[in-house]
Length: 478
Ligand code: ADP
Ligand code: MG
Image (cartoon, rainbow, N blue to C red; front, side):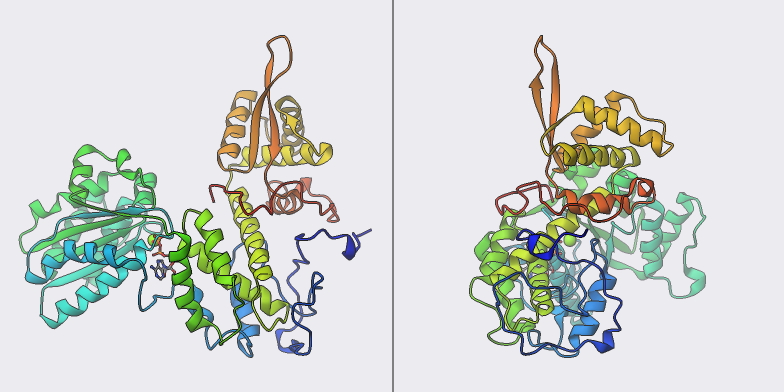
């Protein structure tokens, strides 16, 4: 028997099935009273975001909601990451600092290399993009020989693809382009020729440079940082942007000192700063009077807990608005923000689970299963037995207890579980594991993985949240 809807605890997930209803048949229920008190029923024909963070559902939502929105003005793009706002409140100092380092290029001098670092969502990419645009405009007006290349090293993360992308930026014809399959030396020589043929100052912005180094080491940065010694008519300036504050610790000393010629740290935003950022966007995104008092403050407060991440703050506001639309509400309320926050955390946890190595997934599943059965902390011995049983069922040779113990630590460092050491008399010690994720969401998400699919059970799992998941003070590494 499916659980009765009135047994659903507050904050429990709503029906998450993506409706197969033809979007064209959706009609707004305009006379529904706003803020009706009880948990809203899933609206007929409405669509909820999937358990993942896939953009396709967001686009689907956009397409059915854009037609007639009582909340949004024309476009909800304003709340997306890709939108470049006209001004960046609370980043004047950083904008000036970046501009000061790079401005000599306008006079034909060669700027220092620059490393920008700070936690995710602190406006690094936005600031650099804005300074780049300003400099480019002025450079063009003054006929300065100045070119910018921006590369996101999350996508371009090998030495080959990086040198190839730089080289191909100035390719005039198809024949000038560097193909795949050459030796690295040959690509490097072709890239140098291409830079020479363009000439002038070339500012290479390597965004998320920490990911390049994590994936491919720092040899390519060494190559790039000393390339000026081999160039005559062109000069390369490197601007690295890192989300990892300790990124330079992993670099070869020579690369570090070259990249670090100038360094700018972006501090996390505080709640009042996030409020200003959100208020700016909300003014453009929403119709007048649809954002309840306290909504922006609550988004900002939650995002401050998440390391002052402006991206998180914007995502919360956007999702809160989407929740409001699903409720056919006339206004966005604080309740919508709370719902949005829970939804977002679940999505992030589920993404995190999906990216685990195979045995770690089986282990997590074993932990959740044991925990669900007992509804209390489980000891590592029991978890290991359960893991072994599941692995065998899946046809995987089980790993030794020591490897599994390392995985327990890994799951703990991801914030998915907590393990505390308990003594078991006569000097014996073991770890007791508590679960820090909502079981009713995480197990089905893991079961969607082809590896774990054979373990799946009929839906209809109890909906009880076994954690303090709704506690806003909870902070995790997400
Ligand atoms: P980072 O590169 O540090 O991870 P981003 O520059 O991508 O951060 O910023 C994340 C999101 O927040 C983007 O949508 C960006 O437009 C927005 N944002 C960040 N800082 C500001 C700011 N000061 N004013 C307005 N929007 C901002
Ligand atoms: Mg960035």
